[in-house]
Image 1: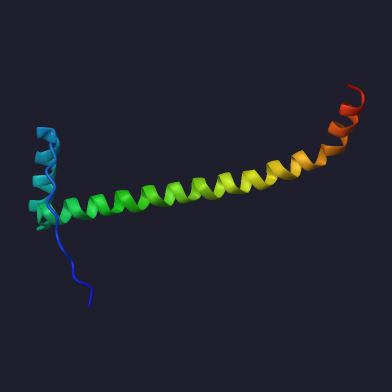
Image 2: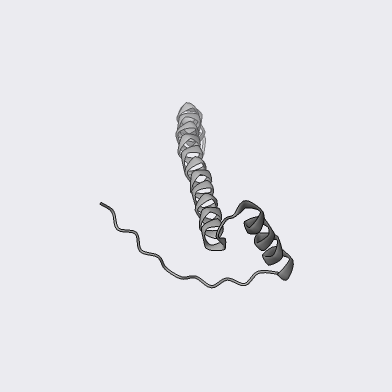
Length: 83
């Protein structure tokens, strides 16, 4: 069984944001720490997914760029013979 350990983090929020969080938690009967943990977890997961998509896109573009470059090898070789 995986053991979960909690770590404490202190953050500063604008008063209005904090009040919105308090109001939301009261209306939904949610603990503030639970809400903040869920929010951060979603944010990190979404950010990592975006970063993975960007990595994949750059890798795909790298292959496309290599293909484009290889198509012009003949032209480049011919240009070097005229120099």
